[in-house]
Every structure is written in C-alpha cells, then in structure tokens.
Length: 214
Image (cartoon, rainbow, N blue to C red; front, side, top):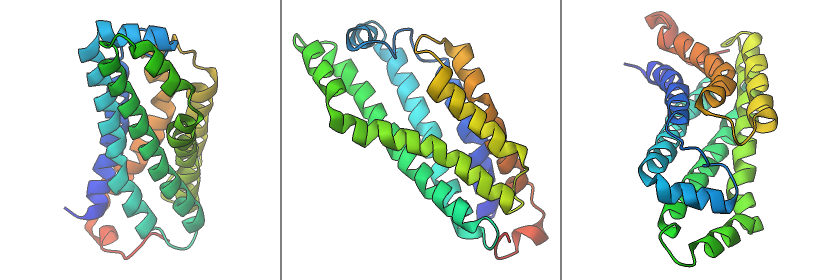
C-alpha cells in the first residue's frame, strides 16, 4: 500500500470520525462557562468520548496533509501548501480545545472550578492558542481544496462545498444546535474531503507510481 492510498483512506476516515463525534457531545457543551462546567460534571464520560473522538478525527488529517503538500507540483502547488500547513495549524488548535474540554471535567469537581474555568475562557491567550488556529485551520481546508482543484485532483465544486460548510459551522450554526444539525453542517466539507480521498485511494498502480501530481 503506497502513501497516496494511505492518505486517501485517512481523508475518507477523518471526516467520518469527526461527524461521529457530533453524536457524542452532551447538550450544553458549547454554552456559558457555568453551563459547560455543569455539563462536564453531569456527563464526564460523554464529554470525554466526544472531545477525544473529535481530536482523533483531526489527527487523521495530518499524514494526508503532508502527503498532499509533498506530492502536488505545478498548478495549485502554492494554494495546496498554504492550505495544508494552515490546516496543520488548525489541528493543533483543535487539540488545544480538546485539552480545555478535558480540563473542564477536572474542574467540575473542584469548589472553585467555575471561577478558574471562567478565567481560562476569558483569557485572551486561549483565543490565540486555540480559537484563532482553529478558524485558520477550517479556512485553510477550503484553500487546500481550491489548490487541489487547480491541480486537477479535485472538482470545482469541492472547494465550494468546503466554503459552504465553513460559513454554516462557523457563522450560522447556533451553539444550541443538536448533533444532527452539527453533522449536517459539516457534511459538505466531509463530502469534499472524502471525494479527494476516494480519488487518491483508487488511483491505478501506474498513476500511483508517478512522482507528483501536476
């Protein structure tokens, strides 16, 4: 199994795992600090499962992103490079969010847990470490898809679907959205990434032996 096949399979699995994590999040996971801490206290198992599953889903992207960056040559190379490494930054942003979610479970059992958690949430450095990279990461996936379309490794509609997903998930989806709406909002991005993964994973042996996509 060559590295393009592995990258393709990871591109298929990653969004599927991410969507699956939507159904693990307990209600109140994205509310105010008080609501989040109450949710962490009431559903520590579900919150742990959700945040770890989401982190694993994004972790799966890393090898695929590196392969795409190293393989694409000529048309679309710059966009793919920007998109791939921006998405890598986004993965680390998601991991910072994962740590914050796990910390909330620990703080939920402490007498001063709410005060500490609220201070963490209000700390501007948290935004720099987690929220900004996260937003850069999801936007970079659209840039990546645009570069892949230019490199003829994706169709024109794939970056469009990715952009629709970013607008909905980051701008229109309310914090109170349930798992079905959350999964549906991410579905266009999932479809775009899976389509790239399928193309990579079913490449013929002759095509897989080529040095790079041009």
